[in-house]
Amino acid sequence: MLVAVGIGAGGLVVGLVVSRLSLWLARLDGEAARSASLKREGAISLMAGGLGVWAALASPTLMIATVSALLAWQLLMLAIVDGENFWLPDVLTWPLVVTGLVAAWWLEPDTLTARAIGAVAGFGLLWGLGWLYRKLRGREGLGGGDPFLMAGAGAWVGWMGLASVMLWAGIAGLSLVVARRVTGKAVSGQDALPFGVFLAIGIWLTWLYGPLGLAISAR
Image (tube, rainbow, N blue to C red; front, side, top):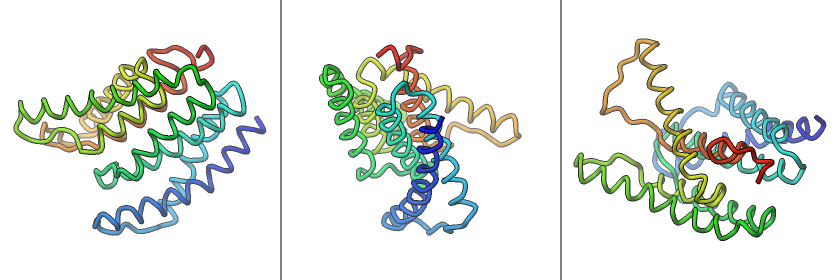
C-alpha cells in the first residue's frame, strides 16, 4: 500500500508535466492553443496519480510496479495528445518502442526477441490495415502515427499480445460509440475517432493482465 501511495503521489506531479508538455506539442504542430486551466491540469494529474496507484496494486514487485507506472504515463501522454489533436507525434511513439524493448531486457531478457518481433508485426499490422482501407474506401482510415503506436504495443506486450490489444481497443471504441448513441449524440461513418486513445487502453490492459486474459504474474 505504501508503494501504491508513493507512486500515486509521484503521478500527481507527472500529470502536471504531461498537461504542460501536451499543450507545448500541440503548439508545435500549429494547433490552436488550449487553456492551461487548473481544471484541466487537475484532471490530468488525478488520472496520472490514479494510473500510478493502479500500476502498483496490479504488480507483484516494486520493479514491475515502477515499469508499469512509466508505461501508464507514456500512454496517458499519447492518449491526451491524440484525443485533443488527432495526432500521434513520432517524438512520443518511438520512445514507447524503445522503452518497451528496454523493459523487456531489464525484466525478462528471454522475451526480448518476441518483443522485437512484436514491434515489427504491430507496425506491419496497422500499416497494412490502413493501406487496405485506403484502397477500399478511397480515404484515410488511420492516422500516420497509429502504426508506430502499435509498434510500441508489440515492444511492450510481444507479438502474442497484439490480438488482445486490438480486442480491447475495439471494445473501447465501440463503448464510446454506444455511449454517444445513448446520450443522443449523432454518430456517422464519417466521424473521426482518436484510435490512438483506444490503442493506449488496449496496451495498458494487455500489459497488466496479459494476452487474452492471462495474468501478468504468470509471465
